[in-house]
Length: 286
Image 1: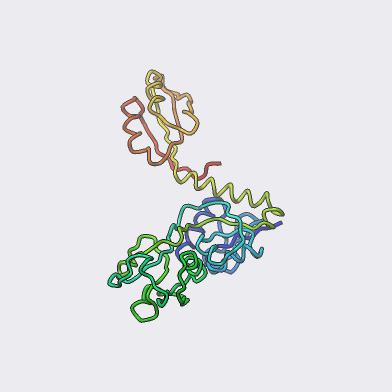
Image 2: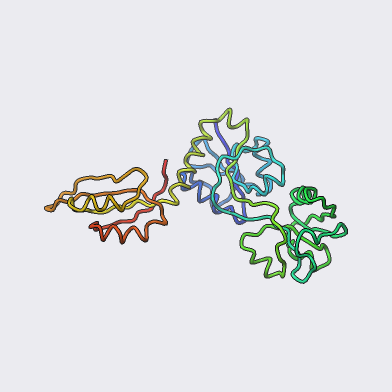
């Protein structure tokens, strides 16, 4: 029994998707040629390259068993999929924006004769209905931020991560429709019939995500200083101690810690008596 994982063939989340699969041990054999379907180093798992907007439906319909896609695209396609993991990249917001020099400063300034341009008509329509607004929606396939300045629309809804592009185009955010990120999804049929393989993929990717925020600290400590080192050392499961073959009474100690603790902790450990401190990246935590 085999499974297919659908990932974007191009765009901002394509390379991060490939990278996370490779770190999870699912290296692509045909990565460079970008064939429609690439084999991985696991004979039971293939990767399907697809348009990002098609992935939610591919997973919903069982064309792919797993998919890496954005919450925004899932909601826009109204896809019936099961979210397994938030992959912690590609965070973005779908926002309502208007020209800086317009009279639109809040949703209360919007009137029914206005037009909104967007690549997300479904989400935009639901937002307008929720706020009792009856605006004409113009669907665009790109360059949405230009719409108000070429007479196509009065407002837009568009994705933004930092707001820089909107500011460059003299647009200001009026409201946020949706907060989105990149997620791993599956469908009910696949998770029932191929549960073991899907859980293996999900567990491996979760291990990569956990490891990305952790570091392994390794150090030598004289026995007399060990208690002082223990006092300042946070870890997932306590210090691991092993003997060191030397003339001094020294042990090797190691522990897994959060990445953001490394800077301050190294100096504390040195002051507590640790030496030969190594900070080592971790590939996966299972």
